[in-house]
Image (cartoon, rainbow, N blue to C red; front, side, top):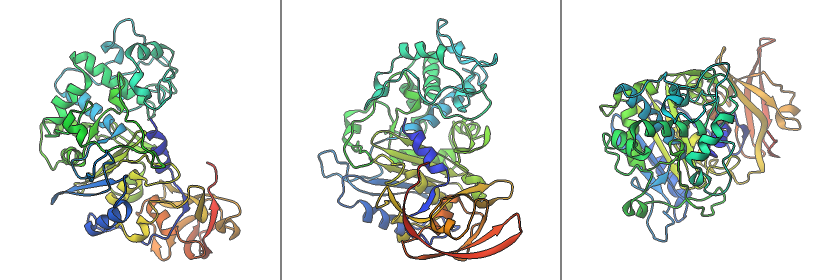
Length: 478
């Protein structure tokens, strides 16, 4: 699914560009009025739109703007239905853990145990793929099946026979359990194995074991006429209407539709605000299985933090989802018991458009949606940008933000700056305890404006202040 590309784009440190964003993290969750202003300024009167949901100890609240674009004048709200793509994976993993809690499956069981005897599962160095490997995304299986054809709705036509045919020839990229590797194939296979074990289809198991206990009546794979009437149409990154996606055997990797209201119920259960029978299973799916992945950060089953926890000192987990016409993000702060839902009826662009996941992480971090930041959620151009020409990285041992790359012929390189320098302050604002995204926001600005950086050279133990003038440039190829 295209969500992996989007996830990689957002979790890696971005090129520093766009307009100035003088924002600050705060102890309060966020400013409701600023969210309303952002949504209405961005989507009023437009076919594309967004729904943002927040939940904390004070309850849930929904903010929305834009239209369903379904040949009616209906506007988006908390009950609008969206494709949620790979957020489905969190349901699949929770479904597995619920099966384990009931004694129906075992995490360490080999996947082959639940498949027909004629199906050959790949191994590596004598290690079999277990159910846990699929749920924790460390099976070594490829991102997508190699026999998955392209097209607008390619998951719809991928059958059980095709899945069984490709498995024996899958070359595992690493030993099962060795490292996190995002895989639609692996999570789709997990959903299929669970369904075979119960003699039921994937959707019925999710509905009966997760949705009904949490009163999530609008979260389904197959939409009733009533749900279809609430389904917003999806758009590609250019705003063009695109067909919806359907799934067959790989439903467990991305087939669910949902609403902001339903997903807030889901998040409430994840952070313990809503007591439920799924609580023991939920807690175990949040256990960190791998740490420090360069793209996904600390990873659970299959929640990820994209490095946000280490950068901010907060305890964050989330998951993004994207299809041909939708992008979505859900995330939560376990320590402060607060969560965020972002649903957008347009595909996230890797070089332009609203980045739903980045917006979600910033909201969890407590960043206010001031006019300066919201102006940059819609870059005016995907080719010509504005900035100083650096790429940031978080250095885990020292917990500092550093220059990873300084691009040639840009203000930073022209000033003699080099990779490895520690970014200590931006316009007097300390970077300690702030995410890379937020630090990037501090650096961004309009062409011709100045930004003042306080930099530390760790080799010389020197601190210097440099003032740069932002300029337009063409985005370097990564």
